[in-house]
Image (cartoon, rainbow, N blue to C red; front, side, top):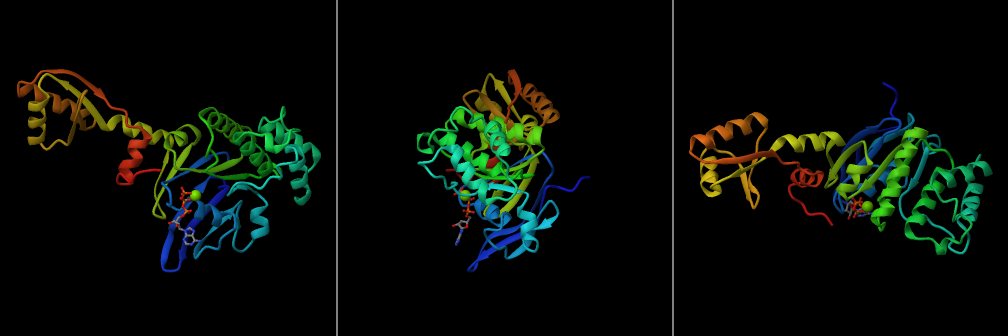
Length: 305
Ligand SMILES: Nc1ncnc2c1ncn2[C@@H]1O[C@H](COP(=O)(O)OP(=O)(O)OP(=O)(O)O)[C@@H](O)[C@H]1O
Ligand SMILES: [Mg+2]
């Protein structure tokens, strides 16, 4: 397999006596959009800060294009474009002038590249307007344009959809996907919003209390949800619930009927038992578990902000 764009091994951070990041490891291959998902305070920003060298790890390391962020910082960071906190922009200058200003500080960025990134983030129409006249979404896009100037192979965005409306989120999502597909850029994007991750990412890593508790392809979350639960519509729900509880089936009674944790085969068995007990079964259908259900299940129902 090709070398991953970013490889993280055993990354930990201790502040005082608190272990804030606990032995986090994952990798992101070329062209993948990787979602870093977790509730407030889980450790997303801290991990990202260590990935871009803004904070020194207590343990472990991050390799970007094979270069260690701890030991070969210059060579590693050269490949990274990142927005960690809100990017600083000069509000009274145009978006274009902001980019020119920034480009002066980065070696090897041509004027043509500025035009290119403006086109990539779709800001052509407004790039000569002052930044103070931009919407939040446009400022985000300008931030991404700035991060793209030096042709990074890895783009890291900490909660880029914060404060965006649904249309803004969709736009961001579309151009991030385009960047990954057409430019082969790997993208790490953090969020505490599940539905968003589902639409934006190829793979998602779930972080909770500083630990990476699961990494899955987005399709796996969804597929797993589909096969795990069935809804039974029955004539006498109370009695059916009694029968199933006696059989040790875990269930939830909803207005629609009885939801049981079961695979396809088990659902067929349950149906048989219900019929045997003289209960009329009107319908059986798989319940699609959303990524949100899945996430809450994994994090033990911890609420999200
Ligand atoms: N400099 C610091 N000193 C002490 N504690 C810190 C420091 N930075 C972060 N923390 C703690 O580390 C934990 C993780 O914080 P972090 O900002 O990484 O979470 P997050 O996942 O980005 O959350 P959010 O969704 O709110 O942005 C929190 O409990 C936070 O209080
Ligand atoms: Mg954060």
